[in-house]
Image (cartoon, rainbow, N blue to C red):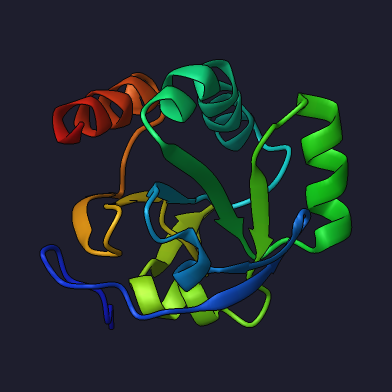
Length: 155
């Protein structure tokens, strides 16, 4: 069950990333794109990360920080980040604290079996820490551009 709601403040959290501990409260004054993805170095997740990487200057110019979240380890994030030259932090949510807060854990079918995993989702948080938009169960093609347009509309 998601504890976040569009139009409401996102509860403060701290989480370990491949760039150190991230505290939501310390990011006040910036917009945040928090995107949840299933697994490092898989085709869709790589394409999505590359999309955010390729448009990082546009997001940065709009005072917007990109942060990725998956259940992978910091070591896995380090490897993925280095290989893809990602300029943003990747949170390791092994305990699924953020996944539960944002309600992104779903049962999915994989090779005929039901598995529990992250539903690809993105959340846009404004400078005051309020969730202003969410995209759930999204498809990768065109998504990063859609998020950028939403950030531009806020600016």
